[in-house]
Length: 433
Image 1 (cartoon, rainbow, N blue to C red):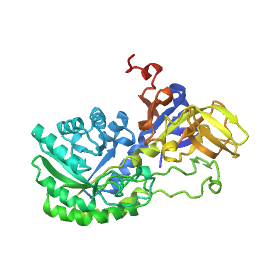
Image 2: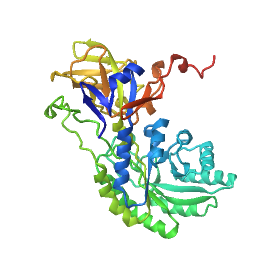
Image 3: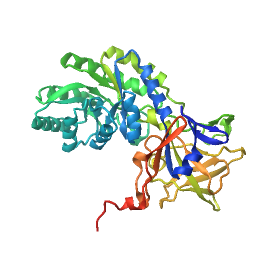
Image 4: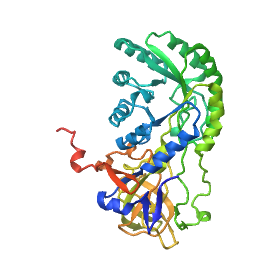
């Protein structure tokens, strides 16, 4: 699952003591495991061996250039949703001809930029966007490669903010409209039809919704294959990861599984189970397969390290106030999501107590855990918020005029700074009186 383990009494990422990393770079601090990212990529790639495929990493999950470079050197393509993400991919050495460009609101400047860089395909989200791409391509004297995004109206049974495959979502073109839109696209002289795309949501923990969506669009794709020279079918991403699980040390768990705060933990959807469920359906379609995983590759590969500033006991509860805030990791506030929290120093005492782990931001929503059973902590202790590699730093902000944290990448026994911590001067650098 990941490369974070206790060793000699402290939490390590691969072969690196995380206390040592914070001594050099401070907190709050994001730390990523290169080994975990590569392991997850290679597992998915291996599971698809024998099938013509391309794994396009979803850049929105974590867009640090060092991580993009790591995956680019492994042969990955990229799923981008903005011109800025395309710029990042190019700066990291990525191949634009392995990039699929998604998003419902692409600007003229972004479309022009992507055409100039010869991206693999635009994932077209609406008829209005298709017309705009055709018009812009005509002005440049080129043909724009496209794949229409099909909305299969399948319930992914995930958080409503990250569900994208229902008819009430803003994404894609309704299944019963797609054939007509393809016929319209075929009549556009500056449009080159390349494939079909779908994406039903994120953090999906069962294989059934993926299989259901593919089965639902298969008749359409087979029909389109007879009419147009389709090259690929992109099944999107969305494979969920484990956020809530007992953290295993070398000597076992530091609390008992039976004492978990929540008794309704969803078991992970493994790469093997996911591929086993969709591959027979994809083979029957007979097109090149594109996948767009993001969280799957980087989610469990990162932690957010934070330092305990104060302990506050009230009449009703105890607060552990840390130096990281919702501006650094907004997922608990935005999605009511769970991140496991573990001490960087391995606890020796099995006793624990219910606490709220909160940050310094002036919002009641600024918390990472409520009524969480944790070992006793004191001021100056380091805590690790696990599974923070996806939708962590990329969603961070300067709210409350707080500088953005630093980022570090670990590779084996070495670690490198891959983004410096912002300074106070950075906060106002682009402002004018």
